[in-house]
Image (cartoon, rainbow, N blue to C red):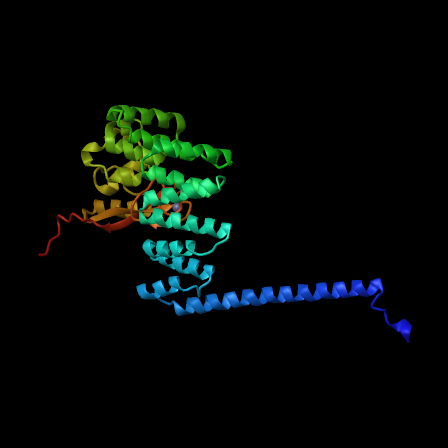
Amino acid sequence: MEGLFIEYKDPLFGIIIFFALLFTISFFSYWWGRFKTKEDEKSLDRFIKNFHSLPTERELDDILSSSTLSLKSLYLLATSYIQKGDFEKSIEIYTAILDKELSTDDRKETMFLLGQSYLKAGFLERSKELFLEILSRHPRTPSALQFLLIIYEKLRDFEKAKEVLEPLDELDMQVAKDSMYLNIVSMQYDINLASDEKVQKIITWYQNNHQLGYMIFEYLFKQAPALAWKNLDQSLCERISDILWNLESHQLDLDIISSNAYLRELYSAKGLVNTASSSSIFELDVLINLQSKGYQEADLQFEYLCNECKQVFPFSFHRCPNCLGIDTVQNEMLLTKSRFETNLSFT
Ligand SMILES: [Zn+2]
């Protein structure tokens, strides 16, 4: 009988006990992990269900002063406020999170989100301080550098913005477009350059680079329409339709318009020339037909799509307000009733 049992002094007995313990610990650790995840998910679900509408001021104070909600739920709540455009509440939540005991990564993440909320709320100085603080602790953070660049740009501190390009470049980020964009914007705001010097410099710059066309021709048509027409890159006509459409009749160059099929259609649709009888663009075709029948109460309006993030805005932009992409604007025509109705008859 004795041979059937391993004596407790036997080294094999120790090894078996060791593996049995290892298995038990691994099993409980796995089970505890699964249990915690499920509990977290349940708590998050409960939280979402409780807040079909966002909490009141008082409820929010209670939430932030207690520690019942997980970090994940607090982030979710802050995001809900951001989606509603209430950045002050998201700032309140992120600030409260920063008062808690946090891991290095969570603190960095929360500071980053707070910096973004400050930026969206228009508190540029506070946002700048926060991103500088993140970078003092974590210098190799490209996203923080990119936000810092945008803050300097909004503060019109273009020299500082250009300085940020250097570390971004060292981190292998694409900075060529940002660099060109900052050069053009800083040139426009340069108080040491006369207006006609700026116009000439920008024309030369475009001739050499053929980039940022929308932004450049918007500036040129505003500052010096005759020079804008003279230097117009006609491949851009469709892209800058809104700029061309909104020019005053005395600002038009009829020679260039008559030499370009798209411009003939655009200005025939507006009723300023009569040199096109149709257009392959639906909105222009409708307007040309209405013009030919003497109906002048229709007009065009534009909305603006970002080619990167596909968000639509009622205003044009050079840097997308949503994804912050440069030169991503694309105009979309909208047929509308003219705001200046002159020939309405009630008889
Ligand atoms: Zn965008």
